[in-house]
Image (tube, rainbow, N blue to C red):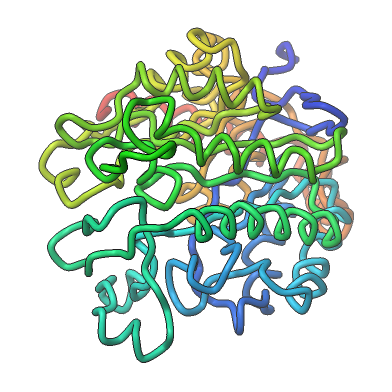
Length: 395
């Protein structure tokens, strides 16, 4: 029996105890009805709890109708949206996992089709027909296909902060264990942070202190509403990928300020501000964002979550052992295999007696293992070793 891998070791953040360091990253599903969770969300998120993840994060959940990425986003702008999410939360809790909600406002990137319908931004006319304003810090479009957003005035800024606060209260009513603020990928908070999208000359623009003001006000307001024993995460784009835009040094400063407001974990992603990110990009490959997570972890003295092409258990364990991050987030690999945490354990040499599986699954698997005398385990471990070796060869 090998020593317990870090990846599979429990972790406490404030009053929340996670059974392992594996987080399911938010993945837009565009399957809500009127902002309410549906059976799709119960199955989509529930299967990751069956798979053994420590923490599961919902997709981007809009704090207001105008803050939606698309027409079928989850929302927490209405009390009617609480009970459908509570159903999902209760199921996840019943399987031993924790669940958090990612609260977001899409800002100048609000209003677009799902990727599987083409991903096209809605035109100004289409938005107007729905009474859907596209908002931003300044009247600068997110790219050639996006309409110019309305520059937010003081009342709009105050309103969006209160929208985050109200959504946080609903998140508590739904029973969520954590809240994550989405401050990355070119959405509202990220557009305030970048000098390319924020040309304001008032208190919410200018130098980095002014550009950080709205995100920090939102974080402080949410922390005040969120129970002291529950953790607050924040997703950032460590670099926005645009020439002259937001950089890693800026993210370290932001992380320090967020920590001072009560944020516990920085979820480190990158890119998404403008169409320019398609030309000036962070080279993609296995673990391509982990260096950013390490820089923020060390520079700001804060817990970080690594995400981005993390493929298997040995890779994830190496990230943790190197001190690059404290949590490992997976998304598309979890779509390929919702039981990714259990496969990762096999790859790391942990013998599985199925005791922590859902009993309706584990009992049957344990019985088969006993009947086969360990030959299945040996076969799986050999396959896992071979697969990891192949990935190392091709990485």
